[in-house]
Length: 224
Image 1: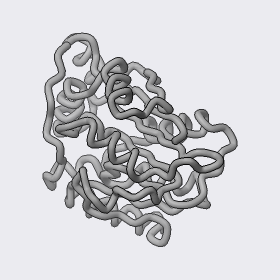
Image 2 (image 1 turned 180 degrees about the vertical axis):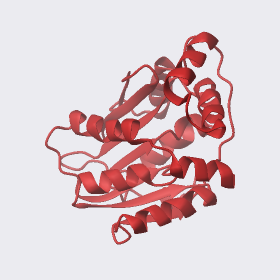
Image 3 (image 1 turned 30 degrees about the vertical axis):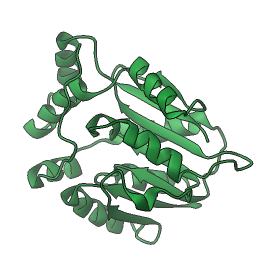
């Protein structure tokens, strides 16, 4: 099935509200579980960059999972960030999570300042996917003794339209129309494992691997 790009920003007020109120506990807790599974016993300490943080649900879950880290969450959508800032405050994590508006590529992220880099559901929104991999190359600390964890989860494009409809029915049938619409279009906009592997090769990120982890998600992970 051919990829069909979608909008790179989700900055509509109703859209942001729907995402802020939605229950993403299953996929987002799975994000944390898969990170821990990738590096068993690893205690993330230091600065973590969350690329495409949206309403900050994963930033909050990650901060709770790893008490020794501070998170900088960046996103290009002000409406999403507004909900994220409120969620961070409600979670009592304002001293450990800082959210700011960044539209990639951004020169403020071109320094190797981060001890870990995470991202969820950003890749399929980008007009140019290499922007993500280049940003990660720039901002992750490299040549450290232990290495810098990079963990990117995204949707994975199905083989055909029938599979898209099956996934929409299975996972978001009872959600608001805006979420059903976005999930449907995001599945068309997502990349496949072989396409992401080609992106990593082109970016020279041979340390990172990509694999399918569910019927709708893939994960890119490794140490830089």
